[in-house]
Image 1 (cartoon, rainbow, N blue to C red):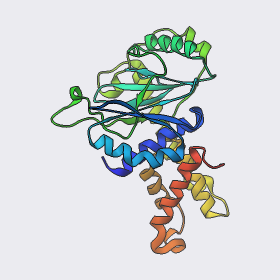
Image 2: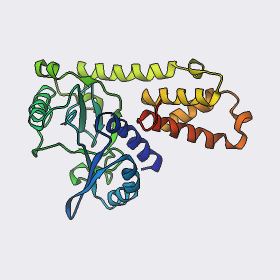
Image 3: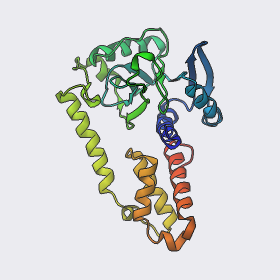
Image 4: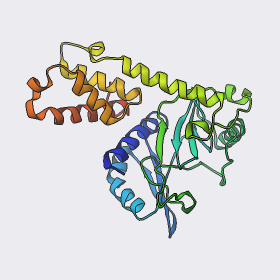
Length: 277
């Protein structure tokens, strides 16, 4: 996996951690020696530990994480359109669902059971806070091997909506949502695909001039923040700025590429809540 791809997936995931996970992420690895918890990591701690996680994953250890928050729950093998959706293998996924209030462990377990039945997911195998796979890493489970290749864990939907707990209790069961992973077609997944297309279309219809001010650097930063919130990748945001930001060559000369990378990095930090917007 390309390094930029790993970090781009992690940046997107930390948006959720910063806003609804209390700013901390518990991380673990699973290899021949069993399940090893790396600890409850802050933003800074995580980036210090990231090279270790990459080396463990390269040694065919799986990387897991969980948000220590009563406001976020994980649903296995189901695509909840309002949640953050991870594709964890060739034909399986996990959804991280954000709730409108903190729940106790018992309340969240009952609500997770309700969501699992509603979206025809797989019940958790263990009690307590559920684990999910960390985006940006490889899933090394032997049963997922295809022609000598193993799947990457990727975010296929990064934006989320906050769900009302009473609404979830009153919801009716839905058909299993596999078509977005190439497993067939149904109306519910078609609606999800349409929503994703609309989000991308909204990002494409926005232009740099919509955020223009007398300070070009501030305009670049605001535009980059908007594009990241709309789900564009780091490289896509860089290319949009390169095409639309006025007079880049005159302003920065041979340092234009460095300026674009710094601007996008700063925008990602803004969106993840590390700096005031």
